[in-house]
Length: 243
Length: 387
Image (tube, rainbow over all chains, first blue to last red; front, side, top):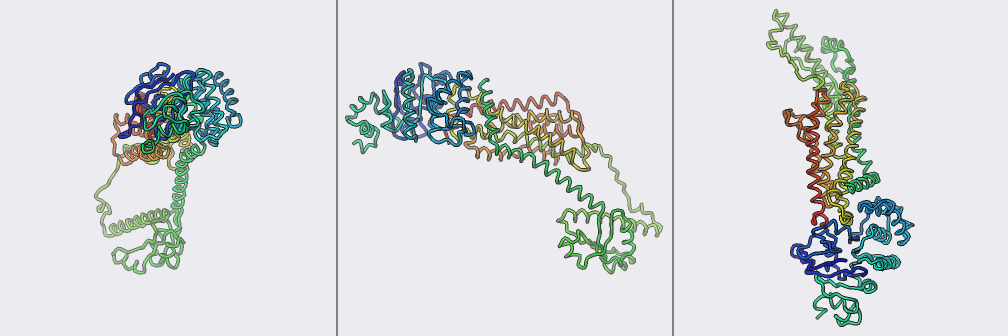
């Protein structure tokens, strides 16, 4: 489980994240929803210890990310927003590389790899070099790579961005399965439907602040809208529209 | 440490698969010996031509004595001159033409300097060298005539030679050859040590940033120093490999280089050269790791390498133009020290083991400091996220 409290980050004059607090519980899917530039990626980067917050703290399973970055990272599997593989390595080698960095024994890695190949339907391309991958193929390998060490906390930055229907479905199934195993899943998205389909808990951010949080129903209620998308627009949209 | 090994193996594999770049490196290091060989053969060819040259002479009838003297010189064959010497030389029909004017005999007998004209094109190597040889021949003829004139007037020719300059050279001939002709060997080896790891360092570090794969790499609970260590080791292996390859090429060049050099360093010499150059390759790879960490992209890294490319040239010029006195302290400045040490080995001089070891340790220590610095830089927010 991930606990975030009072997170703040500025870049010069720009306040990217301002007093953000929320929690992603075990066995639940938490959606970080917000328009582009709302501070979702910045928040996630502070969660996995690549950026230092100016204020506030993050704890992963009770481990402080700032003070014990390595220990916290051991509990995290993450898909950052730069969806990049090593182009001269095959999909399998890309995944294996991270498994080795994590110190997972080779036989365990191979077993899990085979399972991911089946689960994400990667047999056709996983032994080809990543250079020629389609968007969907790349995303599946990235996901398998982020999960190869079976993390208890999964952070996904816009995982379905640019995917076709089939790939998106596969991704959703996997996210649900992770919840079934008791993982804390936190994923960011700017697509309302995505979030409303999957999430048990939604955190809506706009211009660096949390503007609403709760179950999809609770958010509809808070915004006074029947439709979740209307609620999203009302809560995150420009001031003149909200007025 | 184990994770550094994982990174090292991955980067090596990645580097080997980057075939285009790999070939580019191989080509760039082999170009130099090839140029040396071709130049050596070319110089040899000119020597041959000089030893056995033709000299077209216009107006041979104007100076029979001079013509007869020239004809007696070994390796010089007098031929009739073309109609228009200037245009013949310009059109490369002849390398040079000696023209003896009609008033030669008249001036000669009156004791005035008798002019002869050498038509040559000094922009051509063969023309310049041949003109030089003919000029020297004519001057010695002039001196002979002068001596005869003095003797016939009862004056000793020694009177007009008030000084006899003798040079006692302490620079051994092998050392002189090593410093002039073999100056290219340390230079070439240092270039290899310097640029061997360039490709891997820039791809594995600056390329990692450029592709954005750095973000995922940094969340694997592996301390940055191990990541940097692994990447450096992969670059260093390439640098060492290319340095050894460079030594191999030097051995071949020396064996097949024609003529004058006549230096054949022993196996021990080459081992000493390798022991000198390897720590330097490790040090240079560390410089590239730092530069690649600064660079936002592969291209930017290559640009930075361009800025430091002059580093291995400094000792070359420093030695060639005698900027440095060779003392103990120079042995311990990375790059300069190695350059001098390799040169000394080539010149057949003893290099102390402690000197070798200390210079190596200093280079390694400097490499460690650079890597430490790069590790801090690698995970700096402004480095990871500014693209």
